Length: 255
Image (cartoon, rainbow, N blue to C red; front, side, top):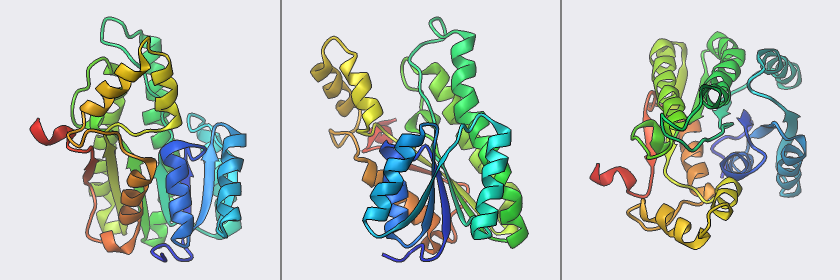
């Protein structure tokens, strides 16, 4: 695989799950990958896995809620590599609740990471991409960004916002050589999901319910989402921008 040969990429929330899978996939495709995560040890582990496999990667601690930290990372990457070719905004958090059970503080917390964080990171790198007339941005939204999901009011609100943000960036900067797309996964078997399942009184029944929402009858593997990110970041997708790429195992087929 050489779809991203010699390109410079940044993946946020790359310490585990989908973010780690994307970072490793990009590295195998030839990119130098900057691995960013709020947990520095997780970021270092992803970097270790990439370098052990012969790839190129560097780890960074990043809180996407902090504008100054995002700007500092952009400057660090500029000094080290001269540019950023591919940005994947994957960092995010979830919340379970309806309007009646979601506090304003819950909504603010999820919004600060999922929406403000994506805004901060993109803002830090977009001007440089526009100046070079080349840049590829992949935002991780969700099936919950195109369909309502029961008991996920705050989460869905932010993921609908990510879809809107994606479309606006794509429209505003298409003539600047920027492509911006959103991936909308269904349920994905990640460490985060495994931890949530363990909290249920009947984890086996909860797993079956989560799997049943996909017509295929199972959750996705992180690598399956990473393959879509690679396509959107590669030159094979040169005519693709402003789209919501649903990878939901058929969840939305009957909606």
